[in-house]
Length: 338
Ligand code: MTE
Image 1 (cartoon, rainbow, N blue to C red):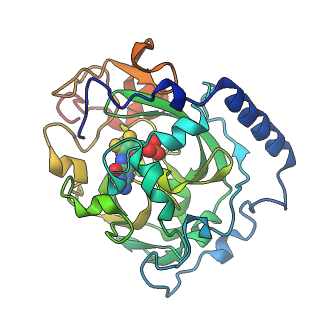
Image 2: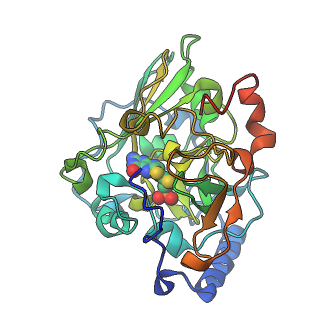
């Protein structure tokens, strides 16, 4: 990543969401939780039947802007996989982003992504699966009950947030499309449309932005196919209309605005690994003991906690999810295979 180690990207005091607005938001969330129902977006009402490959063309071609998602609110049930840590303010979650397709500054995605067209939007599911096809994102959103998963996000740049995502385990999708025995990895391919995404005209990365997981990592219940955050559909800057979130890995593994999911035999070549293999490994598990070649990974700065002068938090192995995921890496030397 084009990382400025001195953190000039820290939010300035005026940019940090006020405590009051945060509390208001939490209050609103509690109320919403009590009132979920027919008035807001459906849970997995018509699940399996809604899930059929459609002959629609490649994503997305609609004329409307990001508001073209048919719903704004999303109902979700709480999950035991959520952390009890206090979520980062909505202002910071949606105002301090990495989405290089819209520019490399943390404020660029919010500034430029609002024009991303998110409907119609289809996602191709390809490769080693019994049921490949091109699926409408609204059908994908309905295949399983949506859950709120409050996860820590640790960026490889040394900052972190706590984000209330909405989605369901990626394994639910796997159950539907049925990967074959030959599928050893999953490749995530994201939208690269220079007409909508000014950053794609630069050569900062090889586009499209791609990421990947080993098949057992993809099948882990923590791996979240994500459609929303803070009770609402994903804002464009956070990867609308659908992204993946892998909380025990550095944030760059959590690819935004997916247009294809490929089940493949060989480890895919991912964007950041291709750009700087010695700096960004395929696994990219959060690991305070393996420094980035240019800075330490031992601590992290929690966004919203006071900019440059805030106390740094110790970074935890697997971002604190070791109990759930360490067994995936039994026998691997995580210093060498990072
Ligand atoms: N996905 C795409 N398509 N393009 C990107 O530049 N940045 C990654 C990841 N997914 C990125 C992406 C990085 S480096 C991080 S830290 C997270 O998105 C940030 O997610 P957020 O902005 O929703 O917090």
